[in-house]
Amino acid sequence: MTKGIVVLAQNNENDDYVEQACLLAMSLKTHNTTPISLITNDNVPDEYISLFDKIIPIPFGDNANKSEWKVENRWKLYYASPYNETIVMDTDMLVLQNIDTWWDFLSNYEMYFTSNVLNYKGKLADTSYYRKTFIANNLPNLFAGFHYFKKCEFAQEFYHWLELVVNNWETFYEQHLEGSSRPKHVSIDVCVAIVAKILDCEPAITNKISKFPSFTHMKPYCQGWNEVQTSWQDQVGVYISKDANLKIGNYAQTGILHYTEKDFIEKSPALERYRNLTNV
Amino acid sequence: MSKGVFLIARNNGYIDYVKQAVFLAKRIKRHLGVSVSIATDSVDYLKDTYGTADFDKIIQLEWTDGTNLRYFFDGSLFKKTASFKNSNRASVYDMSPYDETLLMDTDYIISNDLLKSCFDSKSDLMLYKRSDDIAKVREEDEFKTISNTSVDFYWATVVFFRKNKTNEVFFNLISHIEKEWNHYRRVYQINSSLFRNDFAFSIAVHIMNGFQPGDFVQELPGSMMYTIDKDLLWQLKDDNMMFLVEKKDYLGEYTAIQTSGQSIHVMNKTSLSRIIDEEFAND
Image: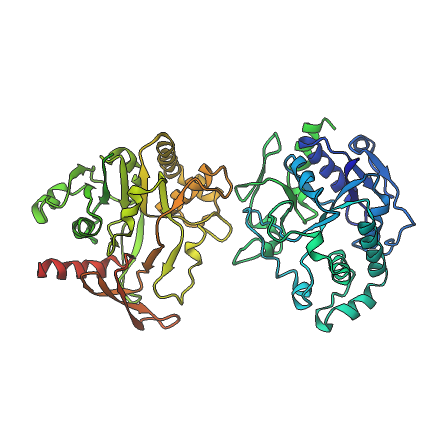
């Protein structure tokens, strides 16, 4: 049984998601031997190619060529993954520890989405500010930014439904979401939640008690602050030691960090640190 | 294993901490039944004014003029600036004559025996993290974390510790944080330059936990009940107290609240002083 991580990266005019995926791959390699494959139609700089097990073109054409967030291709990951067991991650994440034991936990499931995310203090994050659609429509609080699937009938069915919902999101939103709470754009998390609702499979694909596997979600309103600014990087300092131990607001970070802000790579020395550590 | 309560009293010309310590020592003996020692820079004043019968050991501290200045409120309509001599609290580890010590602020009014259980506890270090404003209608966020984005707040008002190598490191760390306060307050996102022991203890707990949430320190039994210095301690009879608690958003207006058998941290030291005077006069 092969195991690996898969990320989808599609650059837009302003954002270099491939670079984010490369940083993620470097952070993964620092602590893990798990292979990572990149699904992209964009150019990967020569010095970063060796970071990846496979670089795979987006299958079935590009459905997101006109979109900014590029989520329209996310349903293809099931078909694109070269592994029997796959963890899907967003590109703007860092792996800060060995996650071998997470695979053992995940192997108990056919698909698994985290439904508890953490803040930088390691406490369960209150995501209600960003999850108004989920609350208003009683949708399962799933996060597609980190999820797992086995190649199996159930996961294939789930992803098939995801294809339908993503490709017809306005219709499904109309059917499943109360009017005022409908997002104006396609959201992969909302689409995943709608599929989970249609298949009535929430207990089979998440574990509300377990704190791990999960990730630290750095969106500012998740942090439990009374006064919140636009960027979390304006409120707490980031410190990365030479061996890539990361502290945010003087809290040591472990697990997976979802840094969410695109300028994190420019503002922090993360890229330099990981390049040194992985000899890239 | 020797055990006892340790108090620190350093007068500042406005608040008579020695008087508070004498008052508290009597209550500790009544409720907790353990010895009390005191470290003070006013030993002669203690001997001449109150006598030494309430204390097991008296430790002389050097007199220094406090450099920390702060307001001392007496209700919301009166305040006075005075020095706040809160330095070297961490040296209690070396000063305490006991193997098991309960360190207490002198403005903590003991009214029950809850803290007695510390001496039977398996935990070697306990502080209060849970706290309750007796008014229950005001913002309590300043006692949840040491600043908006920083670490959890632990009270240094009451601390239980056993002497061991780990706790020695903990108290040495607090001394270091105090010495390098301007560095630590910036790293921990604290805007005020005023050194506070609560902050130093909170930072030290965070560091001893490996910069993560952890269980290095255990919680003292119950929770830290407190009244702020905008409230007035109005009456005390045995273990019953009446406070005039400032109404939320109504400056200078108060609601009476009565407590019974509840130990309370009284931040209005001036009103505490008046009550102690009445108590001593009745004695």
